[in-house]
Amino acid sequence: MGKIYAVANQKGGVGKSTTVVNLAAYLGSRDYTVLCIDIDAQGNTTTGFGIKKKSIEYSTYDILIGQARIQEAIRRTEFKNVSIVPATSALAGGEVEMISIDDRMNRLKMQLLTCRLDYDYIIIDCPPSLSLMTINSLVACDKIIVPMQAEFYALEGLSQLMETIRIIKNKYNPLLDIEGVLFTMFDPRLNVSQQVVAEVEKYLPGKVFKTKIPRNVRLSEAPSYGQPVMYYDKNSRGSESYELLGLEILGEEPPAKKEKKGLFKRKK
Ligand SMILES: Nc1ncnc2c1ncn2[C@@H]1O[C@H](COP(=O)(O)OP(=O)(O)O)[C@@H](O)[C@H]1O
Ligand SMILES: [Mg+2]
Image 1 (cartoon, rainbow, N blue to C red):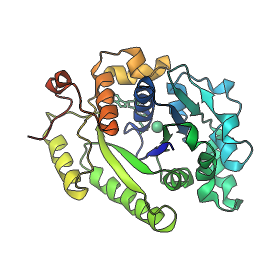
Image 2 (image 1 turned 90 degrees about the vertical axis):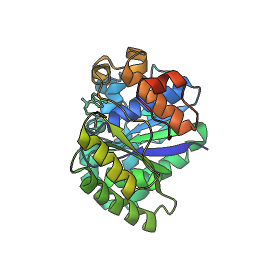
Image 3 (image 1 turned 45 degrees about the horizontal axis):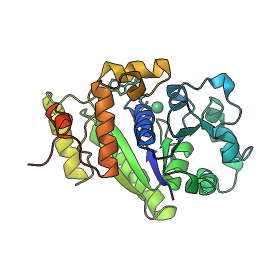
Image 4 (image 1 turned 45 degrees about the vertical axis):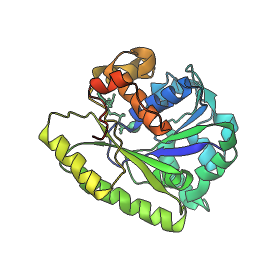
């Protein structure tokens, strides 16, 4: 049965969509079958895989409001073993339309129950808010990946997210937990980076990914070509760092040469 990750942080621009696209591509390249769910009206994961908005027949919006079954909305991407339920701007209105729907927190979960046997991993790209779409994702998922920039106010945002997780856990999803906090656009040379990592490690012991994603221009260029970074520039630091994240999630050791480049630190 597929493991379901929600990639969530109510702050925008922290690397959620980048993480979904590149983690999915890596796991797909390793022969795991992956389904991405784009539940953000901005549709950055959708375009990140080169899917044109005009070509979308059914989207996440349709499956949430019950206009389509998830099987009708799933599309193959051009990338090995990766499929997606795409998003369009229609999702922005879905929030209000769903007010009158019973059981509106459970809509995504119900749809995923009908397809989770078909995939090894399902990865949900959440919007930058603690809205109904994020709540649907937290109700539906097994574990949460929290991309975060190492900034001064990071911990404030994290405690707000933890409070939401606590409520969902109590009411809807008792096994809900954080898989890991992922530092993105990370610069290990800055004092603030090390301080914030230390604070988050103290706040959530054992929940910080060893892998840190550096700021890398290839990662920001790849979406405009509609490609995950490993297809756009396999030898970039961006590509290597998401490979390390994939290995860490799979519980595999990274090759020693990657460690030398400073993308990953083993505990001494
Ligand atoms: N590690 C990185 N290095 C450089 N640019 C990045 C990196 N991660 C994300 N970006 C860029 O930063 C912007 C925000 O990232 P995105 O993944 O869309 O964040 P979110 O989904 O959290 O809003 C995008 O333009 C993206 O290309
Ligand atoms: Mg996004």
